[in-house]
Image (tube, rainbow, N blue to C red; front, side):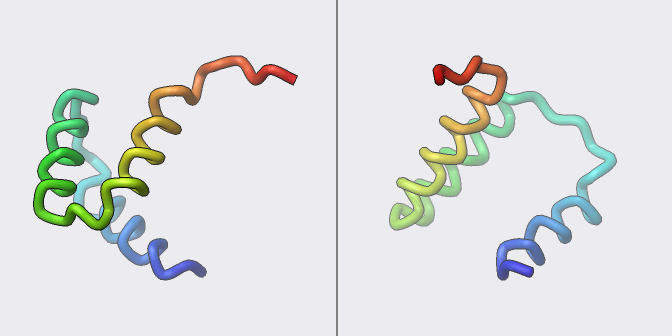
Length: 59
């Protein structure tokens, strides 16, 4: 188990029944990076990955 799994599990347990918009999520990610600028690159990678989930892979 990765260390981050605990945070993901807590998120699912505490807020898993909620529905949020992607706009809301984007704002929370911006707030997080404003408070924790050292995490800008990982948050950017996560946001880009989420944005492109449905893209067709070019092989």
